[in-house]
Length: 414
Image (cartoon, rainbow, N blue to C red; front, side):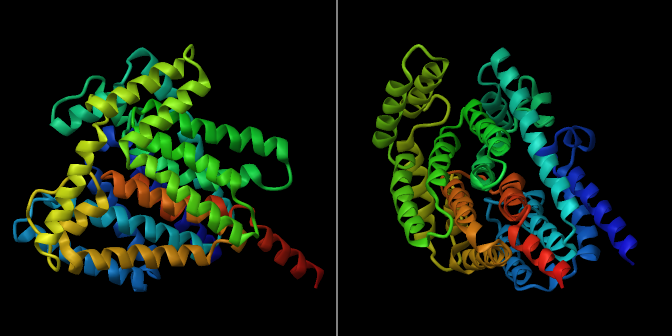
């Protein structure tokens, strides 16, 4: 029976790796249709992780998706076709099922396999994206803009192979707190600083070369937050989180953000390569050349809020801002659709937190804050975001759990 379970487990991990086309690269080029492979994962998870499909998380997800489907059928164009509706369900369902699989089987070596493959791919993508960005500046943003316009992007093969994926850098901040914990953890300090410190630097570089202001600045704030977190000092940590929340205002206010950029630029000096990039970011904020100015972004958020106020209970088919995953869903679905969406996420997070050691939970709270920030500020409700929040970050934080090792030693001593 044990051997059979191991085979099922390894096979499912193999399916997961095939399915993660935005993270693990070339599968999208080979198979072209992501929803087909996500659907295959759904089929296998029904047999492998039946526990999830009997959970309250899945029940709330069903309620949410029924409302999404109803909205689509009555002509609301926010979820503009059946594939988008199907993907909305799969992006939320499959990472949740994967998490249940890992927790129910409790095979640490397989958990480590997925963690290491993910981190190795991030290293590969960062290095490759950096090289291509030196050869073709702004290639990541240009590819994204072309895809949004429905035209063939220059060097579109890079997008398909995951080397210029615009969604991935926006999900990267969710991983930074989990990696930071291991950099700070006691024990092999030199190795921790070299390996995990290096990973943090690569994560920040990936957000930087993507040309996206929000994840880059959020990553810098998260690194600072995680360095300040103290294990076992809840009162101090809550204060730090309040300060972090205030610092997040930089991402909402263009004047504060520009002041912060000027401070960073003055600190680094004007003869650095980073100076030119910071000036590009400043230009983007002021003139909307790439990232879009924050004043215009605020108008998009207000559009979604107005749509919600137009029909609080069932939402509105008025044009959404299409720049905030949370506000857009609130506007288009109303409270009847948005509340099950929130309850699904909250119940999933509570389930995850219960399985994370107490002394590490503040680092996961930081991951949650990062995800909420990105989902509020950008329309990034996609596979990397939910996979990192529901699967990879919790697994990294559970890796080499000291309490489990202590329990094993106690069992041996008996």
